[in-house]
Image (tube, rainbow, N blue to C red):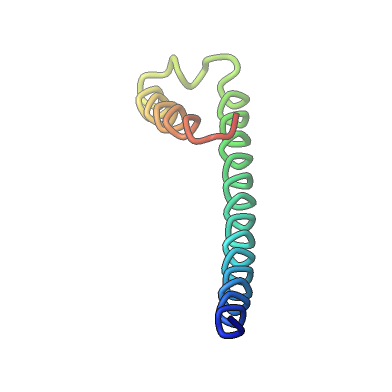
Length: 82
């Protein structure tokens, strides 16, 4: 009975440290995702600010590049936190 209690105490202690480590890693990843989401939102706002008068969009030479950048930004917007 005592060996069972010792084994259970060891398993419980190891489980505590494993769970604590996983929670800390999860919090770091949440912070990373939040920062990435903020960066994507900032880029989206800046892109909209640059072309608020549709000057780039209407230009033939720059328009193609700007449309491609907008497509990339739309794809990135799907990864933001809502």
